[in-house]
Image (cartoon, rainbow, N blue to C red; front, side):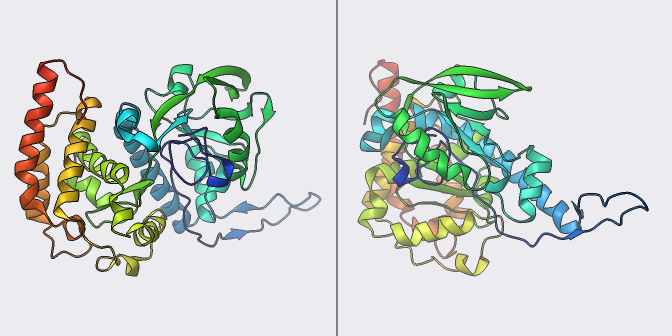
Length: 367
């Protein structure tokens, strides 16, 4: 959510060279050839401009993009309190951010560009695609659908590559300041909003477009699959998965296990609308995390959940249900990379009791 746009640590406001991003963002989609037909000109009239032929594939692209956008919006909503309320616990991974994401039609190649225009109303101008609840952007009144015109009076880029080029504008402006002036267009009228900077965990949260029941983190990104979201069902259960992966990121477990590159490849793949399914066979070269790492991540995740206002009473039963329905032998499932369920259960009980005791005594929720 930093500043706004690009593709890397989602929520943070990093230098342009590190690809500044905004909170959680929808990944660009895969390329599908666009079909079009040239209309026949009537006698005495110039030929009409070519219009894309609406094919079944284009309609499918629109449906897929609409579902992706709806699910990503849900992830924004669920992740927001985890990311904003836990900046203290994220330590060195906390960053300054404005709290929104932005895209235009060029964020989606091929038929998905036309789908983005038809379904989401995108054109050449960067448009707010999501606002992180509780962020400075939300408090300033930025809304999904607002066009981005300028930042501190500096015109923002448009057209292809605008997301990436906007990083060079936002990066220097957000550093060491309390707010930024944003010029937006809404309902045909320009207005200037003062957007406060917010501290939050610099973890990007994305939807993974695959049906295996899993989630992944490479240390700076978390991707939760469509299959895991369907399994979890409730927002609270989705928050359990996100919190545990955020905790693994903060604790540096994937770096310790040298899993970062392997998981990064998986996240890049499932961020597409049409992932390469062959890359989802087996464990993808990811080493299983140790029991000590799992216990430590549960401990931190439970504090994060409580600080974010989520209930923690069903945390243990959720992971038991997952382990029973999708045990470790299912190689592309969550438990294949997190097989140590037995030692986690008594440790979860202990942490839940400790968190509740601190809540009752009105003590700080810090591990």
